[in-house]
Image 1 (cartoon, rainbow, N blue to C red):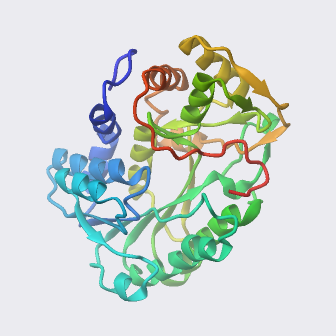
Image 2: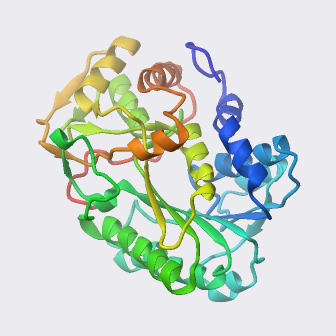
Length: 344
């Protein structure tokens, strides 16, 4: 892990994000069989797949780890293969291509569409909901750990401290509604076919090149206005999110096991911006007034099962401030953290 001064380059970041902890090594040691990561080419997929490879090796388990995606960026495919991940190029919505994929005992399900969903509602529902049903039919005999999102809850009063897994969902907008639709597909097939599933309701995974804290840091650095209307958020270092997700293979069940994955701190957008301003010696331009509710979740169950994240919010801010002010690489994919109407 990087010191207080941060990371020197992308290679150091990706090594840290894919480094398994003892809990992941134990889980991979107990888990039987090969693993496919569907939708591996997204923001989290490459480091998660590499963590599986590393943890399996440390556990002394020989298995195939296969990443499936469309791989519009050939460099990402080559990097995965260099890290020991087999790759298959496929459009999962094409039934013929999906049918040809190998059958394995373990699936990490990551395909999703968020940004650009407004104006492409049909594709959003196909990717976020229909595809989950297709994959359940294909992998009815497998254990499935599937990514969802805290957006399925809707806005939670800040005074409550975050949505709980037992709360009734209240999604806002096509993206969040279609993600709840994804969960409903997994729930239906889990109950009707006995598929053992874990649903990961993730809130704001962060690394050096992407995430809500990076968005705020870039705005601070460039002197842009920061809208604090959303008021509060949760965030988690991506390596901690990867680790908690993989350890959920120990908890798959029918009906599905549902768990919030995020950091323990409820962060104020205003406070985060001001802290980043101090770290980068920049004046902060705040606009808007904090609402009484926000997209926030309580991850107490995850912390009870897996321990709290190893990287604190303060350490993330220090690392990100150093990264951004030194002009290092960004994925260029803003999170649109200001959005309160569900339109992405």
